[in-house]
Figure (cartoon, rainbow, N blue to C red):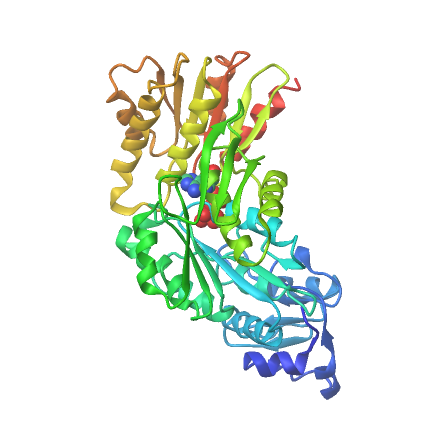
Length: 475
Ligand SMILES: Nc1ncnc2c1ncn2[C@@H]1O[C@H](COP(=O)(O)OP(=O)(O)OP(=O)(O)O)[C@@H](O)[C@H]1O
Ligand SMILES: [Mg+2]
């Protein structure tokens, strides 16, 4: 963060300096990171105390200062130096906005969409870093806490901020854009993620389009020409519009000749107005092609040349865990850990990848529930079960098909009911209560050459299943 005194922080946040401290205390400068996790406090940092569901940050205030924090941002008195504020997210937002305004040389890009924000942000950051010092969030730091905390990491050396913007309702992205007004905005897709909370796809589109609306006239909206709801956002922005999308669209940035290797890693020819260049991604799954195009379109707008974009995409690694991680066990079983989250679009993308990897062999899908789908939840789980069973018999898939669908937990019934709609599917459909039971089922079935996909919403914690499957290899 840029160095700020506690008195200045109190002024910016409308807070009160702890009255028990000597007056000169206000001159103490915070120079380290602002964090909400007391275990991540560093010397000279500021610890923001947040009351969560399971614990209250105020209880860790003393530990944070003992660990090196200069002071604590708190909503009630704590026994260590503090700035008392009415609302911690609002205080973080005010601080972040102050920092952004103090760093006019830093260019701000925001990335939103229903699926692929983190994957795209990680790709884009690895491109933009080639242009200059870049701040991008770790993992999915994309909400009213993670967003300002990320912005607060910027300092005078920062040239680019590549930010992930999430929404669970209308108005959320507009709010994040006020904290750090982006000049560049990327919208990936409008899908079912959190559609239950939004109240349908039109509302999702309304919310994601707030990024396009927030862009200034000298900004650039980077829109997916392959998603009509995203392309329609061109009518909601003052900014110049640039598109990425399928090869048969008229998008400026496209991918031709897409192929996948044995592990599902895409290769393609990147087409841009400047010419074309070959790209081979290290990420798995065809769904990463549009993510890569979005990252390329952004980096291109920021001034990165075609060859550097293509090289950068080919060199970029997965920075965030549990998204399409593909591991091969010594015994010849392949495990796809995609247990970070799940919504209908991302489960379809993962099943496509499973079908590709399992070509000529046997695929097993361990699927947990997809959260936050609202009224459409049951039908969506049935559709996914059907998709899994159907894709195994689709054209170009020469293997013996999806050998097993192992449905875990509460939504197992609709998942399996959907799969049984595909009468010609020869695979096995099993409902199990939890991850441990899924592991038992797999232990009796897996043979060298098999591929296992593990996928569910975060709440299901199926990443443990993938971790156990990989341990088995060492036994
Ligand atoms: N363009 C895409 N279309 C469909 N699925 C995708 C796409 N990109 C990524 N995915 C899948 O979606 C899941 C989440 O990916 P990622 O973390 O990049 O998305 P996100 O939008 O950041 O999610 P969150 O809302 O949880 O922050 C992963 O399983 C990933 O494989
Ligand atoms: Mg994310």
